[in-house]
Image 1 (cartoon, rainbow, N blue to C red):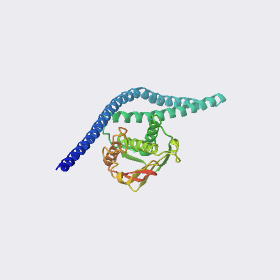
Image 2 (image 1 turned 30 degrees about the horizontal axis):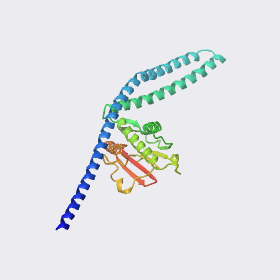
Image 3 (image 1 turned 90 degrees about the vertical axis):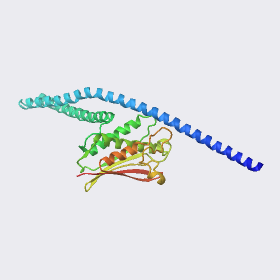
Image 4 (image 1 turned 90 degrees about the horizontal axis):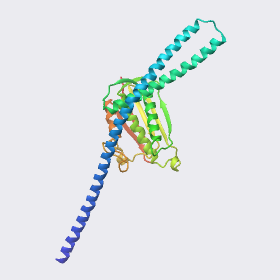
Length: 294
C-alpha cells in the first residue's frame, strides 16, 4: 500500500514537472510572439515612413525627368540650327560637346525613370494596392529588384559577398504582370537565398565555397519560366513540402515570420502560375516559377 502511494506521488511529481516545463515553454512562445508583434508594428511604422519618403522623392524626381526630357529637345533644336551653318572647327567642337551632353541627359533620363518605377512600386505596396496587370519587361523587373535586394542585404548588419549571375532570355517580350506584387516575389526569393548562403559557412565566413545567386528566364511554348538558385544550405526533404506554408520558418527566434514564401506562392498563384522547389541539403536550393502567357 505504501509503495503504491509513493509511486503515485512520484507520478504526480513527474506530471507537475512536465506541466511546469510546458508552462515555461508556453511563456517563452508568448514572449516571442509579443516580440514579433512589436517588431511588426515597427515595420508597419517604417512602411509608413518609407511611403512618406517615397512621396517626397516623387516631386524632385519628376523635375529631374521632365527637365532632362526638355533639355534633350533643346539640344535637338540647337543641332538643327547648327546644320544650317557653315562647317568650321568651332562648329564641330560645339557638335561634339552637344553629343556628350545628349548622352549624359539620356543616362539621367533612363536612371530617373528607373528610380520612378521603384518609388511608384514602394508607394503602391505601402498602400496595399492590389495593382493591375500591365505589359511588363520581366527581365528588366528582375534585374532591378535583384539588385535592390542585393544592396539592401549589403546595407544590413550581416552583409556577405555574393556573386550574381543572370541568364535572361531576350525572346520573352512583354508579359502581363502585377508589377508591384511580382516584385515582392523576387525580393522574397533573393532575401531567402542570401540568408541561406549566409548560414552555409560560406567563403566570407571561412568556408570553401563562394556564395552565388543564379537567376534565369526562358520561354517554353506559352510558359515563362523563372529560376532563382542559390548554393546555400539547401532544404531538407522532411520540410520541403512545408516551406511554402504560412508561418512556417526555419529561421531562429524572431528573425522570420514564415510569411515571405507563403505570400510569394499566393502572388504566383494569382498570376495562374506555379512555384516549385528543387534542393539538395548542404548544396543548393532552386525555386522555379512558371507563368502562363498568351
